[in-house]
Amino acid sequence: MAVYRIGSVGLGSISKGVHIPGIQKSDDLVLTAICDIDPQRVKERAEEYGIPEDRCFTDYRDLISCPDVDAIDISTPNDVHFEIAAAAAKAGKPFGIEKPITMDAAEAIELARLAKDAGVRNMIYFSYRYKAAARYLRSILRSGRLGKIHHVSMQYYQAWGLEKADCPLVWRYVKSRAASGALGDLGCHGLDLVAFVTGEQYKSVVSHLGTFIHERKLPDGNGVGKVDVDDFSNILAEMTGGISATFQITRFAYGRGNYQRMEVYGEKGGLVYHLDRIPGVDELEIADDSTDGKYVTVEIPDDMKVDQMQSFADVLNGKGDGLNADVNDGVVNEKLLDAILKSAETGTWINLM
Image 1 (tube, rainbow, N blue to C red):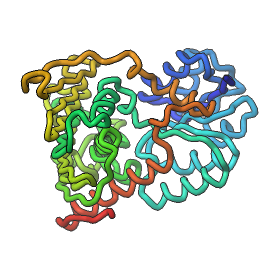
Image 2 (image 1 turned 180 degrees about the horizontal axis):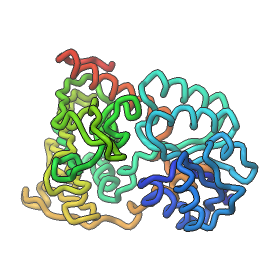
Image 3 (image 1 turned 30 degrees about the vertical axis):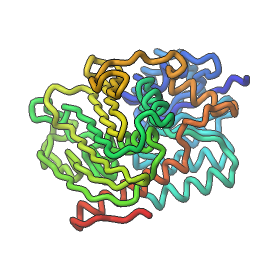
C-alpha cells in the first residue's frame, strides 16, 4: 500500500483532537504540511508536529499546490469547505472533509460533480460511522434479527451552549459561517448515523428549531454579537421501509459532553446505542426473545472496531470497506438539512422523494 503525504487545512480543535492524531497513528499516512489563517497557530502546530517552515502555509492554495502533498485533510469552518475541496479536486488531489460538507445542497451537488470529473477519491468525516457499537447495531439490523423496524429515536446532546458555559460568539453561532447551528453541527451526524445503520432513506421531514441565547459576547471581549442559528432542533422523519424516526438535538443539555443515544424498535426486538454515557465509551444493548425481552449489554466484536483516519487511508489506497461516506452521501445530507431548515421556516412537512 502507498503511503500518502497529507496536507491538513484548518488546525482547530477537531484537527488537533482527531484528525492529526489519527494521521500520526496510521502507517499509511504521514503529515507533511499544515495550513491555517492564523499564523501563530501555524507556528505552534509546526513546532508540535515537526513540520518545516517551507511546508507551513496560511493560504490553502499554497498547500494544495505543494508538491510534497498527495491528499488534503479539511477541518475548517463550514463556509470554506466548498472552495478548499473544489480546489483540491481541480488539482487532482484526493480529500477528506469535515461535515456538513458545504453550506447548502447546491454547493454539495457542484462539489460532487467536480470530484467525479476529476476522478479524485474522497471521504466525508461522519465520525460516528466508526464507532464499533454503531457498526454492530448496523450489522444486527441488516441480519434481520429485529424483523421489520418500526421506530428509531436519536438524541445528540451537548452542554456548551448553556449560559453557565459562557461560550462567546464563535463561528458556529454565525449563519454566514456555519449555515445552521446545532442542526448542522450535531444533527447532521445523527441524521447520517440513522440512515447508515438502517440502510433506509428519508422520505419527508418536519421540524422545530429554536434559539435560547440570542446574543453572545464577541471572542475579543469587545461587545456582543447576534446569534442567528439554532441552539436546538427537533425533527420528525418518515423513512423508507416504513420507519418513523425522531431526533432531538441540542447544545443545552446540562451535564452532557458528547452524549448520543439511539433506540431502535422492531417487531422482534429492540436495540439501544449509547455514546458517552460513560465518558468516551460506546455501548450497545439488545432485547429480544433470546434475552427474555430484557435489555442486556452485548459484547462488541473486534472486527467492528475501526479508525476514522485509517479508513481515510484505506479509501486513498482503493481498499475501503464500503461503509465510508463520500461526496454523494454529503449531497444527500445537505438536501436533508436544507429541507429541515425549510420546514422550520414554513411549519410544514417537506418531501424529499
